[in-house]
Image 1: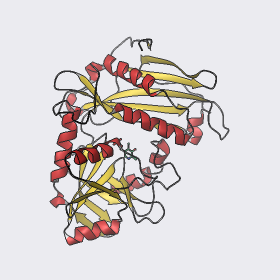
Image 2 (image 1 turned 45 degrees about the vertical axis):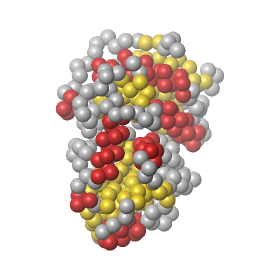
Image 3 (image 1 turned 90 degrees about the vertical axis):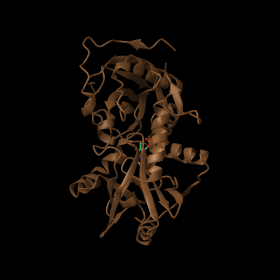
Length: 355
Ligand SMILES: *Cc1c(COP(=O)(O)O)cnc(C)c1O
């Protein structure tokens, strides 16, 4: 498909300093846009200069939050190519989120082709540093001008790109986690399994409070009993207890992370099973008290693997792996980033090479 219209930016921005990228602070020169109307369905896929968009103040997304998003990355590989990591999974999940939020499905092939062309056009923006990449943020918003509470009849899809360094200023050093025992993120039957802004809006208060107390993320418990572990901020979570690797089962309120899936598949390819089951925070802290909680880490596109060094729940604080990066956290981080960057054999066929 080469009929994507391209309107080039008249002036290109100067690239930010590679050492101060941070996460999501800088954006490239162009973006991908596509519109939906009931008559024309999804149409007019195009690349245009990056910049503000104009919306009616009554655009439905502002009032009822009908929105979905994705997060993926493009890497410069060792041989000078560009690769995406399992983009088919992101597009599948985007449509699953659309399904839940009553947004019309997008043709995954059309969107992937658009993303590939956009990334190709912006290839100079892909940073080369060890922990850096070009973050890709597709999202869809309800744009119809109406205050009626119903599914909108008009939407806009955008894809913006941001060169990013390490997600955490601490780098791949262990983070401290606050187990949230007052607020909840999602309940079964809610929208926890969709990647949608509302899940984040409802979590910000807890996140800010945790930050004030010196913790970098919150760990969410189930929304009914506040007993079972769900996930951490924008990451899924894994534990190694007495030699066994465990992650909360996808019960409907947890986001099905692609990094989570990759960790499970990679460990399986090494002959190491991952147990997917419910795990209570009491069981976890008891394991820590007994000295058998050997490792904990979060998984997500932004940070890939984020080792957890300390955790606080009610009045108890535990230290995990002596506050250091655990063996499996390091191995998985090196393997996944190695595959992404083309430095390791892609035995599971995850790299989507652009050129
Ligand atoms: C995006 C996200 C994740 C991680 O998913 P990946 O596909 O691994 O990036 C985990 N939890 C939440 C709530 C998320 O939004």
